Image (cartoon, rainbow, N blue to C red; front, side, top):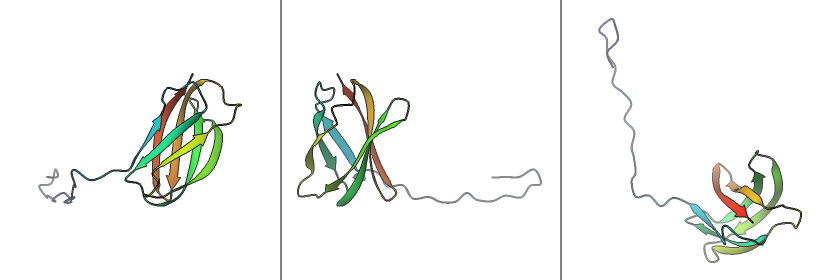
Length: 106
């Protein structure tokens, strides 16, 4: 970058890693007509995750803790019967890591 006074400074060099294995979650069936579903975590770190369910307005409707292990990446989860049909976001958080996925309950 060159300033108006003619001085210059080089930009910081940043490393970029392509083809990195990013943690993701899959939720199925989605859309679904029941409040029970399967949650599969891919490339996630083992441990306990805070799972939260938000409506489209961002209101927290439900929360629980799940334990993930790479030997059992898929879990069956059931939402309370009081959750009405609609579009929601499920968020899983462990430390600074946050994974989220939209779900539709019909």
